[in-house]
Amino acid sequence: MLLFSFALCLFQHLSLGAAISLPLSQSFFHAGSTNNTISWEKCGEISGRVFECGRLSVPLDYGNPLVGEASLSILRLLADKDTRRGSLFTNPGGPGVSGTGDYQRERSLDMMEESGGEYDIVSWDIRGVNDTTPQVSCFDSQESADDFWAGSLWYKGVETNSSLRSSFDQHQFYSHVDAEDTRLRALWKRCEERSGNFLPFVGTAANARDVARMSDAIDGSGSEINYWGFSYGSVLGQYIIALFPERLGRVIIDGVVYAPIWGAEPAVDMYNQLLTDTDSAYHGFAALCAQAGPDRCALASNNSTADSILEDIRVLIQTLYDPYGDLDESLARSSSIRLNIFMRLQVPRGTWPALARFLKSQQDLVNAHDGEEITLASLAVSEAYDALHNKETLERHTRVWPYDFYSNYWSIICSDGPDYDGTSTRDMFDTIVEACKLSDTFGPMWPTEGGWPCHHWKTRAVERVTHFSVKPKHPVLILSNEYDSVTSIANAYKILENTFAKGDAGLGIREGYGHCSYSTKSSCLTHVIQNYVRNWTLPEDTMKPCPVNEDLFPQAD
Image (tube, rainbow, N blue to C red; front, side, top):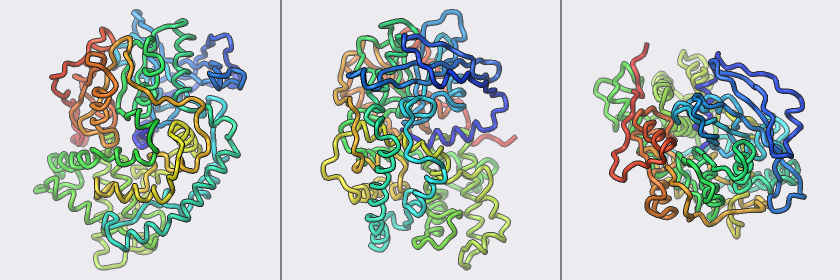
């Protein structure tokens, strides 16, 4: 789940000069391994570390092999050390983030170090995604996707200066219900026409069974399954635990989504749960900015406090309130300010100083036109106008992703969920209004998270999992940050209380902010991870949260 963190990490890694990709043989894209073995080819390197790629054929439907096959695209980074312990499978999240692309390659290097170098790091494109076939796509090009979403709330965002509490803002908001409902019906029709034959076979249960099949092929039939999953990957991890408790080796779920809700409740209901700790993370951003001072945080002055910085941002959001869409679409409205902050809360390292500079540039634009109408014409002659369009400013969220990303995302989240009896597009709007009670700043977004089209999605996965309380062969490690802005630590506690008996799982907590354990460095948490993967040692219940080992507003070079 958690799409935004990947988008930010992608931006962080765009300048990787040391990454070298090698062309794969043409047969790589057409052949699988029906004999349950994988032929590996070199497929690139980063800083001298060579990656291998392979393919494995698996049944589309494990309950009926005659339906056909899928061909999984797999990436492997061999263990650093001679004392190899096997494969450590990993999923980067989404669902729909590629497990074979540049982002995952960087993460594989990090995971090699964090896990101690004794496991091959194995990732793959889950069903429907990237180079795994069959692929799922609702659009044939970026242009057709942009044309489809043009003018939608999903594209433009929600404009409000009252957190949708005023009758005017609510009237404006609900006036879009019919248009959005028509659009979501049309979306399903597109997806069905282009990928309908494969949609029943891309659910998380099938992806979990694919992990077991890959483990058989790489480490031997019936081998223990080692796995580390992030965000949506934590959901996949819980499915693996539920389906293969007797085969579990080292299993880590990180940035936790609570799987019993994922599969049992309408996807629109998950949005409010995403916002549980978002305001706490937002306050943390402001507090660290004030502490850093004006030399290291552009929003701060010598007398700033967290509350004064948050108030300045609130005023900015209100000033850029654009209920009628009068401003040019390329300009920062209140909705895009909210989204920009929300995205960057998930990946503090390297992005929080940039977020502060972005917000300061907007304040400067507004101050430069005090008393004047803020229009495209007036902004175009402002020196600060470039700040809206430089490389540091994130693209609109619909353009950060390849055009087929959300096809993959929705095909999985909708397929996993329950049948929808009576859920409507109006209910989606009600959910967002309700979310405003949790967060004034982030409740009134038109979110990309969640299964917004699912009530019009006609297909469900051929296998769905609803029971997750099992006895694992070995204990499971759960990782969480104190203030994860999208997957609250409350989810980790729910799993400890409701899924596992005492001693069957342990929780490692890191201080601070960001989404998933890798969002901020902590040598203490690395020690927790290595202790577990080497010895199955779990953190003590009384263990204090691990401290962070980096400054999120560092001194500029």
